Length: 249
Length: 324
Ligand SMILES: Nc1ncnc2c1ncn2[C@@H]1O[C@H](COP(=O)(O)OP(=O)(O)O)[C@@H](O)[C@H]1O
Ligand SMILES: [Mg+2]
Image 1 (cartoon, rainbow over the protein chains, first blue to last red):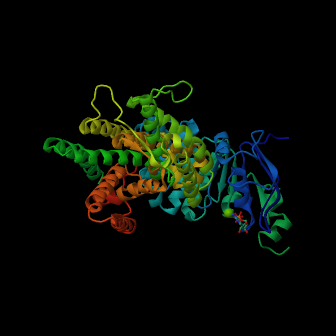
Image 2: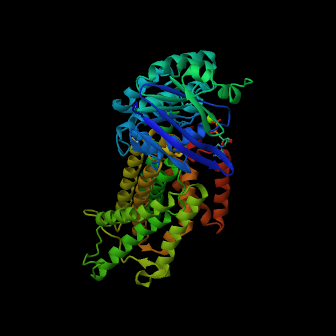
Image 3: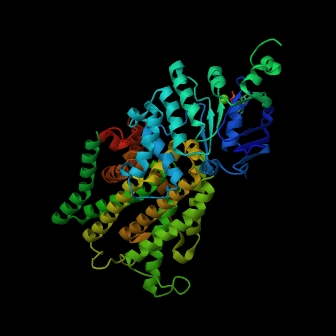
């Protein structure tokens, strides 16, 4: 059995009468991109939110690096090395791009209870943050407030923040959404190399990107994973074609 | 724009000593007291501004800390005067630095459990629960006859500061003004620091902060406690200014007044509390003599600020805030 970075088991989550997660299990192995696909409303974001700690599951367990993290809060999971991006960009809007990344750097260093030294004159924060911005191609926009960035730039900034956390696993919720074909292509190239740093659980609608990147694909429908396999297995799975790829059986 | 804010700030800081010095030379001690009052209220609001301005935590209970600080000064002085120990054999004191330290520590100690409970809520619930805690302390003070109950507690003389004659208005103004400067400096460094970054991020987007690995709850709790400590120090100074402390310092009116100061002056702006306090006390002085309903006019000004000048007086004078 290959070792697992992340292991989600029999997760359940209801919103009232709606079972948004219905016994979902999946895992993430070192060095892989595991794509999670499924129609709108299938429960992909809800699953990511439970893994990151933003939502508490009704039942089931989540293990990360061999530790049961089901009961830990979001900040603890993040400090353990779980970095997520949001489907709808979620940044400190008044802060510049640089300061958003610096926040992740200081979180990584565990130094938020320092009250005196100005952050902007602290190279141990600004330099790593600037490096991350350069990696995603935002160096030229470092001093622009997050609120004034374009949609695509905010998506890039989310990635830069995640990078700055030096995580052990990435949870990316539709990072290509609304990026345009150019941006999607660039990001696909970037994610291709990123899996060497840490494995990626990738929720994505862009099937070209998924088929180009994924080592494994899981298909989520109505909160339940109906198939997991390689790209070609998933493409040829009759149940997947019927339920998701929209083809007659 | 940044340069303009600096100019406005420098002018604001110079305003108080200018008034106090002028009053000293023309022999109008009353205006020194007025300037001292502005400085103390400003310091209290600087404290609240850590929670409210930086953290977005609208505490409607900061009078609890202002009043507690006041009672620390009153109670310690009374015990020193009667030569009775306060508790556990500890003597009272009329030494300001000791009183300040006691006020700061006590307010921190009281703010910790209050914060632990109320920071589990947010929005209107947070406002209501901080109000509820403050009201509990208010009624406790009213119903405790040992320290004057409803009538409050008079200090037979102003407490002392080594090497200064604090009974005279001008030296006492200097003491207060230096503490205000220290409070402003602290706020300034705090806002620019790692802690300030985390706190402001907790206000802007707590989900983002948590996702980067910093617990918004922990950051807010520390901010709430620090905020209470500074407001408590101002309370001790206020008791010494008036040589009197009463439950009114603990009342919800006081909490509201502190919030009003910040909104008048400009939220999360370094000098907002000072501008707000100056405006507030001038209003009180200029209109309070003409009509008992001066607060009606204050209310109108407040409405105007909320609707037309979100940045308060500082925003009006200096433009939008800068951000790194
Ligand atoms: N906080 C919530 N409260 C109630 N219903 C929700 C909530 N979040 C998601 N849902 C519902 O759960 C289902 C799954 O949503 P989501 O996880 O966002 O799907 P996906 O990301 O796959 O498009 C949808 O029907 C959505 O309306
Ligand atoms: Mg989604």
